[in-house]
Image (cartoon, rainbow, N blue to C red; front, side, top):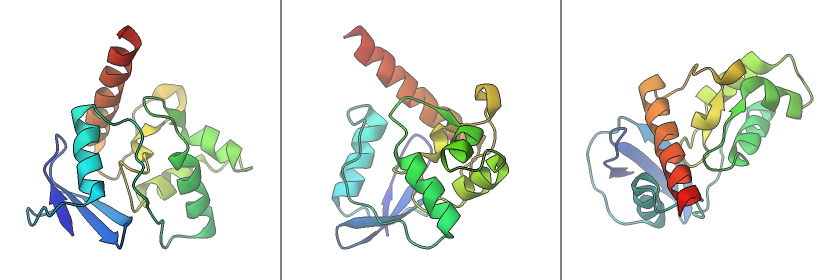
Length: 151
């Protein structure tokens, strides 16, 4: 596992060959050998990267969870979508809570941006890394999006 220091604390990045297979919050500081994922995460947190291109592989999870993670991966940088909207996109409008559970089990947070999923009316609810981290990630993206709009 590679560890990178970020504004939301140390992130542990697990890779299998070229693919990222895990990102973990509050990782213990350790080796930070270079890998494209580490470089892209540094660029993301500096505001220089808005689209991850590093390959990732979503492992485990139920069929429903993998479908939710696939929908999350499509959310554009700087945008948010509700748990209910994802449930509706998956054909089950009543599954918003199940979507929340799947988001919490996302094995590759930040790269698969579950922080962009919010409650009804844009309410900040739930996040496996804690609401403070979610707020920071959304603030970084909002600031970068605003800077690009004014450029």
